[in-house]
Amino acid sequence: MWIFGRKGTSGFSCCSTAEEVTKGINGFGLTAIVTGATSGIGMETTRVLALHGVHVIVAVRNMENGKKIKENILKSIPNAKIDFMDLNLSSMESIRKFAKEYNSAGHPLNLLINNAGVMIPSFTLSQDKIELQFAVNHLGHFLLTNLLLENMKNTAKNSKKEGRIVNVASAAHDFAYSQGIIFDKINDKESYNKFHAYGQSKLANILHANELAKRLKEEGVNISANSVHPGPIATNIMRYNNPYFTGIVNWIGRYVLKNFEHGASTTCYVALHPQVKGVSGEYFSDNNIAINKTTSLAKDSDLAKKVWEFSLDLTK
Image 1 (cartoon, one colour):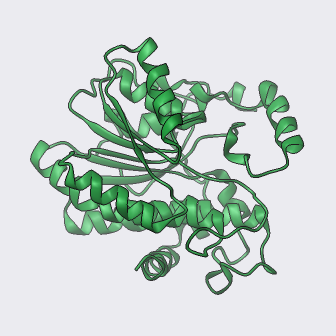
Image 2: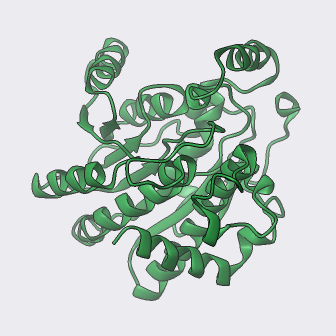
Image 3: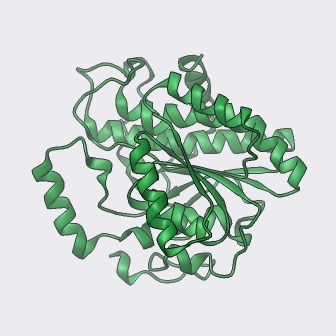
C-alpha cells in the first residue's frame, strides 16, 4: 500500500507531498500552463507552483471555476500570480484558439503541465468525432503541446532556463488493449472497452513524452519531456460515470487512496526540482524514476513514432 512506501534515490517517496518535494525551490520568473486545474491534483499543482512564485495560467473549460480557483488560492497565497484562460481539450478549435491567444499575448512559457483528463466514461465522441478518452487525455494535449512548442523553445533560449513538459499518465497504461493502441478502431463503438480505452490514452501519454523527448534532444533544444504516474487518487476525473459508483470510490478513497497533496507531488517534483534537470524521456512514479514500472509497449520506440505520426494526421 502506498502509505508504507520507502524513499527512493531522490530522497522522496509516495508519502511525500507536493510542498515537501519542492521545499526551498525558487520559481520566480517561470511561467506555467496547467490543464485540468480546477480540481484534484491539477488544483494542488497550481497552488504549489504559485506558492513558489511561478506565474500559473490555469487552462479551464469553465471560466467561472477558474475564477473560483484563483480566489481560493489568493486567500492563502496573496502574492500568487494566477490567470485563467478558456480551453476545451475535446475541441481542436478551442485548443487552436487558446494557443493563438496565448502566443499572441507575448507570454513566455517555461512549464507545460498536461494534467487534464477523463476516465472510463461510456462510449462518447469528442466535438471532433474522436473517442473521448483518446481525444482529451492524449490528442488534445498532443495538439496543445505542438502549438505551444515554438514559444517554449524561444523562452528556453531567451531565459537560458530549461523548459519542462510533464504528461500526467498513469500505471493504468498497463491495461491498454493488447496491441497497445487500436489505430484502426479508435472510434469503433463495438470494439470499445472503457477500461482498455483509458489505459490506451495513458499509454499514448507516455509514448508522446518519449517521442517528444527524442525529437527535442535531436534538435538540441533545452526542453525536457517526461511522463508521471500520480498514484491512486479519487478525483472528479470519473465525473462521467454513475454517481453511485463514483461515490463508492471516493468513500473508499478516504482510507486507501492518496490525497491531492500526495498525488500532485510527482508532477511538481518533475516540473521544478533541480534533480530532474537534463532528465528527459523518463516515466516517474512516487517522486522517482520508475525503473521497470512501465510495460514493454510503453518503451517501444517504433510504437511511439507511430503514435506521433497518427496524432499528427488526426490534428491536421
